[in-house]
Amino acid sequence: MEDLESGEPHKVSTCAIQGDVNGLEYADSNLIVAGTSSGDILLINSSESLSVRQEWKKMHARGGCTDVATSLPGIVTVGEDGTINVMRIENQRPLRVIEHGDSCPITSVRYLTTNEIVTTNTVGQLRLWDTRSPSDEPARIMVSSDHLAALRSVDHHATQAHVLATGGADGCVTLFDTRKECAPVTKLQVHDEEVWEVRFHKTAPSHLFTCSEDGSVRRLDATFDLKVLSRDSGGSSVEVTELITKCGASMNSIDVCGSSLVCCNDAEAIYVLDEVV
Image: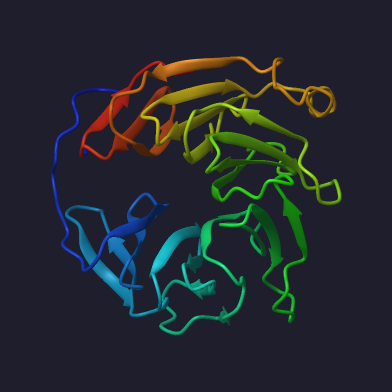
């Protein structure tokens, strides 16, 4: 796509692959990692036109891959089968496979450091992993609340890596402080339906963006004080700004870079918003 700051986006290349794309992330400016419903992981070259550079077949069985994360040269993938694959670009075999990383579907994954990852699952758990550990057990499990709604996504604050935000099936954004034992700092009712993705702005992390099944995109003021929030369970101290009002179709994915935000929905529409920060 064309530079969003200088003109209208338009299609310049396509790449046909088998299955639905459930996870997609730029590894660097020229490489994209994709995870599919067929369980395949693809490394796609995007320097000129899109082309598959490397493929790992059937890395996830039942239900396929649900998400991917990159920290070059590392790649980690998760799936409906509860498996976690720790991989490396140019290595055809995974460095490590945690076959029973979870007893239920894993919904999302993010790198916290080169050797630490965080995953979410369908029973409201946030799991922290050290990929160097010989154990197949997580380093820690944190639970979103007594009411175990599925967690759909997770992201970490760019400058305060101990601050994590998750989006849940109950329409809530839950904030965790990994310096605490297991309970979340607070749970905010931001949407009416499932929160499909949460994203901290990478260079202006005082902004947290969300998208939802209810068709809306919202921005949260993330300059909050965790100690204050822990005493404010209703989230009244957090300012929420509506960027897209309910558009009639589920808003499935968002990303933000600079002052622009890109999001897409079930109606196969792509929205580009300028001056969101």
